[in-house]
Image 1 (cartoon, rainbow, N blue to C red):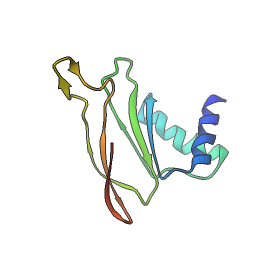
Image 2: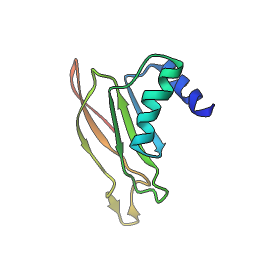
Image 3: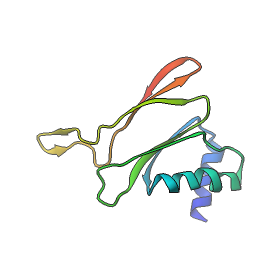
Image 4: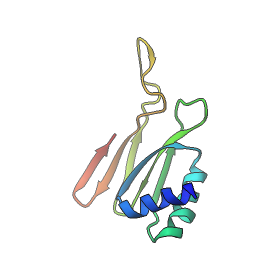
Length: 107
């Protein structure tokens, strides 16, 4: 039931781009996109991407976009560090998308 409620939120918000965290795997994210969301409404995202993070529990970050928001590139910041060690506990991916108004970045 909880996962269907999450599907309802995605359906109701109808966002062009969703950034997700606490994602188990790309397979799980695809299942959510192709099975859970359609149970509560129509939208299925055309692009699903997942990035392995620093999390020892193997919980990752991902993104889902609609057709008109093609992922052009991705830069991972998983290895960025400072004097105290890794900066990000998971990752801080940087995406570039093509849109009807040009290339845009999202962090």
